[in-house]
Image 1 (cartoon, helix red, strand yellow):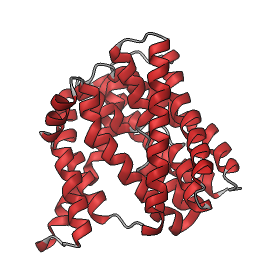
Image 2: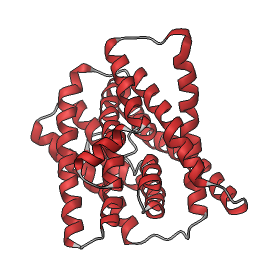
Image 3: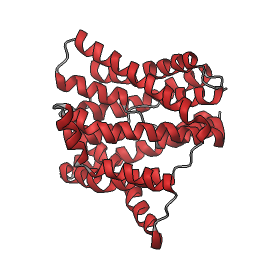
Length: 300
């Protein structure tokens, strides 16, 4: 089955790099703070700029997917907020759960999966979801995790290179401006280093903590892998989205917790260990849940 092949092709290389980081972290003490900051302040901004600058998307699906994405996110946020209030979770645990539930792996996993399942037309629409998700994660994520009032959070976000990389990449793409002297290739080279360094850091973090799957990891995986795509499915029906846009919305919403959620939490929050475990657990549980949602949206 092509979609299972896509899932294997995406997850197993990720598992290999995380395992390498785990084994290295067990044997050699590493300065994870420096590694995380190198990734956050240089490599990930380069990756985000490059992704936005090179994005090829279909304008036909822009409005429908934007509406579907926004409504799905609002509903998911309300559910997470209600659960946090109902269970009287601490502010740190609430934010950790929010980060896991709201930040999907819609980039390297989601785009690959959509391409294998829905082809080029699906991929162009999946890029729209990826851009919207990146705006949420890197534009609002740091302020959300760090806390404080809206004004303080917004001013904090404006001091991060993530925000400017995102904005500049989208602006140059929209204006059709090409960088001279192949400078975009230099940026791309830095960006390509982000994912392996990030995965190695995730493995090292896990090597320094006791691996246990508790209620938090289970709830985070449920929110990300079951509730989010079910909400997306309902939202697509409610909005009357065309079949392809509906399928892309559900499939992108069904991806596991983003590795970048761990990076942001490690730098700005206090639940890095739980989020790291949730990334790993949800990624492997995706083998069980994604095929079910592929069947739900009519892909066999």
